[in-house]
Image (cartoon, rainbow, N blue to C red; front, side):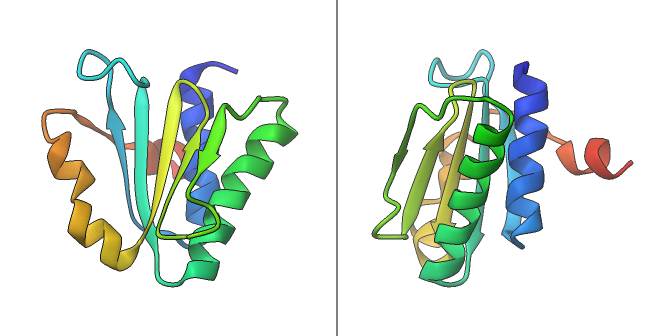
Length: 118
């Protein structure tokens, strides 16, 4: 599975769990951490955990090894590291506080939704 397929898989997983305000950033040339970031939020601890779990489960179903998951128990900012794609699942208040997409404001936004739905 290449990084674009992995990006689409993760995007669809967060979307299917009704994550809000999903943004995919192309981090190539901006950060050495990953090729893509997905940033989204849930409105409760349970929803944040459900979103992160769905990403993990779908990636594993496709044979992809999860590098690590951080913050799952606290459910305020869960990071799911898939290697080339890192998914940040925030609780709404924490997303407003950290403003991660502004921190990486020079990264172009990827239009993943239209490639999945179109």
